[in-house]
Image 1 (tube, rainbow, N blue to C red):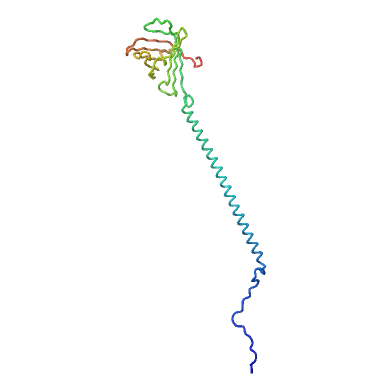
Image 2 (tube, rainbow, N blue to C red; image 1 turned 45 degrees about the horizontal axis):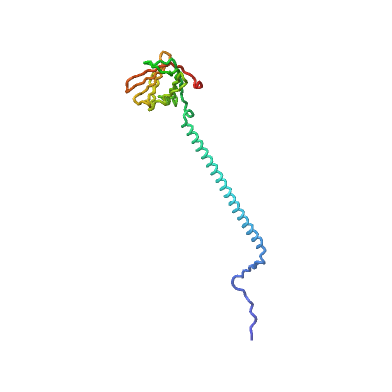
Length: 220
């Protein structure tokens, strides 16, 4: 004969019940999806912001580099201009110019020149002004007939030098190399003189002397 029914007893730990296990039944899922989408958009915006910032930084760097290049080129151009100015006589450094007009010309021994010299112009230049010796020395003789004779066209191998009491030039005759001329400007007792000495084979042949006065350059 069957016994009485047995009660069902639950043994072990109680089963865990998962609520809203189906995605469609999870009420917080839309919120999580919304936050996920928001975070994704924020990340993109942040990335775009970084990209724009980087691009702006690149453009700024490019502009600054071009500006620096232009500044450098301007400095180099200015340096070239200054260098050219420093190498130009009379611009970078002051020059000293002396112009003499000479007359009362005496020739020893006397000659019988049909077109005698009536005036002599002597020009001396020191460039820079502190130069010890003249850097240019020109002599022009004006004749009675209006002819002009330039010593620089008659003599070659020109040498220029100064002493304590005089300024000098010398050269060899182009037409007759046996002739050498030495020209000297000196002052004595407050008066200025210009003397030319002609040597033939080293022997003094002729002396041409004149009395001079200083004149402004605008006179010629």
